[in-house]
Length: 183
Image (cartoon, rainbow, N blue to C red; front, top):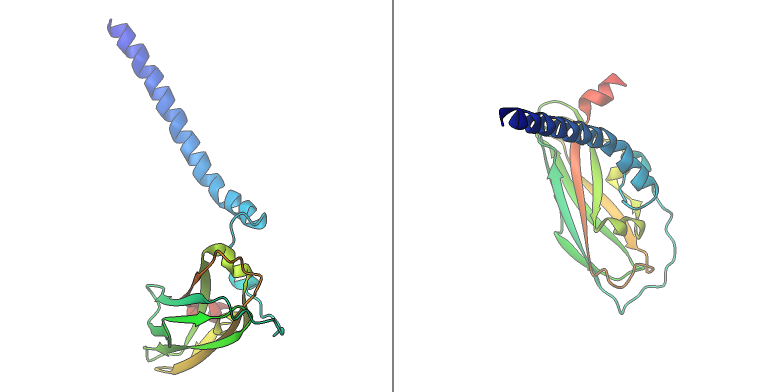
């Protein structure tokens, strides 16, 4: 009977080892798999180098529709700044242009280079949210204790599917001072 238990233990150990190897392999393959899915547009994401300024186009304004745009601001945990939107939300008509100001302040006694990275919820919205002017297009340089008002001008393309009534645009500011100095 002890031989039967030993065989079962060996079989269990082999199964657990196989599961562990499979989990490691899946975790290792996750990043390239995510990149492929993003490439195929199954998952939409904005990369800093993909954020593009679009020209102002004369859209037909859809006065019958109203979309709520919520603005969220966060700081990377190592970014010593203040950062907020002048408005928490704005009701907009697709096709009409709007400008929202954001406030950022360097809280340190040193110059700082920072970058705001946008993200949308739901993610598919990024294809319809067109930025004409945005502080997120490039790194921002702040002098010691400097505060800035930074505008973001946008329009929601009227082709936005009617099912979307609320858009959340979130910006996260990152301190890129170290990276910028090394360039």
